[in-house]
Image (cartoon, rainbow, N blue to C red):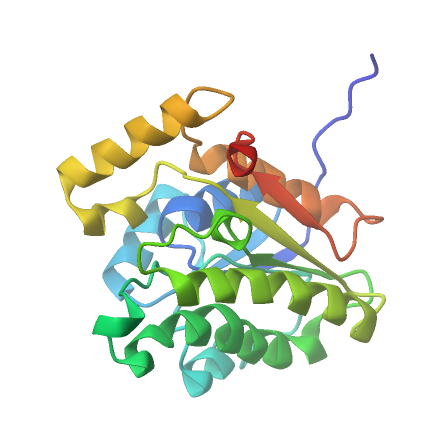
Length: 244
């Protein structure tokens, strides 16, 4: 079998929303190790500073992905963006019968509106060889039925958005990464016991017998950034969990 060396990102400029932790931070480490100049974008200056230090020093910008003016300000003063990665977006929970729909709509703001703000602002800086990776998720295929309806709708919508934008923005490529259950701090909001139970249940049900790691998703994102003939695709990194 031939071996394929990792894509080089030498001299490429990569902007990562949600880059201060988890999948975004792992992606920053992956592309920086291959030569990229990286800018991390997140909501908390302290977390961004810690992430930058962990990576040996990278650019940072504070912005909430759901706030248009903050997102647009990230790109002011930048001269080039070769790749845009958006991993920002939390898990919005709540049963519709018990929750204000405006609160549930936050999932759509973070996962649909926010990426649109970022893509629109980045477009004048993206070369024809540029690419965009958006964040989907397992809920697109397997909504849990426990109060995550709008998150499921948002990640499903991201897939349609990417396919449409792949045609609209050509030759700039637009793809989606769709992780399953990944061992990140995203699940801390459920509490330690519930987090452990989720991971244990997922591992037992998964065909690969475990949850995923941020580094595994980051490697897949790096692949999408560098694969010049992959466009409008959804790459699932879930160990086959969407089938069980």
